[in-house]
Image 1 (cartoon, rainbow, N blue to C red):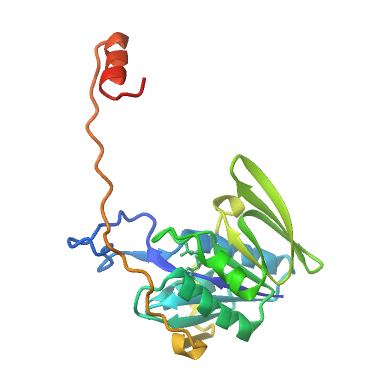
Image 2: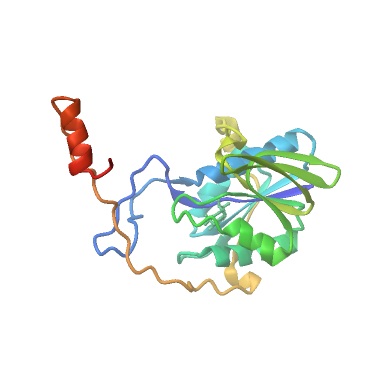
Length: 249
Ligand code: AMP
């Protein structure tokens, strides 16, 4: 079985994003970038399936600028076998990503595509679902457990207030949730080895997809800062303030 893992280059989860002065988006210049955390979980799950003898090859694919190569190299250092960079310089929307991934799926014929449940930059949570629709494949989203057996995938999904188990016929789409696994760190020897693994470069045109955005971002704003706290003398004052100032009682 071949597994395709789409990996997105996003602002490092430990960096506090800053909104550009003109409100047109988030500042990306000189900001530390990294693999989307849910995609690290997806790469880890693919590697575990390979280690368990359920998969033979893992292909990591990223759509983005030339630097997205580094994100693919990280996946290769963790244990993916080869990479595909679809070079697009402008911002890509989930539908564009899904169309490009469909092109890769048509070429590569994987039996499983494991994506993150969402990219932490735009929080869209759309790409996996759109790809499943374009391919007409079944999907197991928000996965906290994935078991592959005899042409089927049993996926435990995190849903409001509990868990749901679904059985999917392969080929299928899985999107990862936080509790699926703890991704490994790439060792130094594996980082060195990853430099020699194959990495193809493609363009959106190779898949007949126009990456021009269909949505226009009107405004991006910082969340309102928190008001300073205050000390109250006693319970009576606290109740009074909750009732008359905060309006929560
Ligand atoms: P989103 O729908 O944007 O929240 O992203 C969900 C998932 O789709 C991510 O966790 C990635 O697995 C995949 N994805 C989204 N954008 C890209 C991209 N530009 N390159 C590769 N994978 C992507």
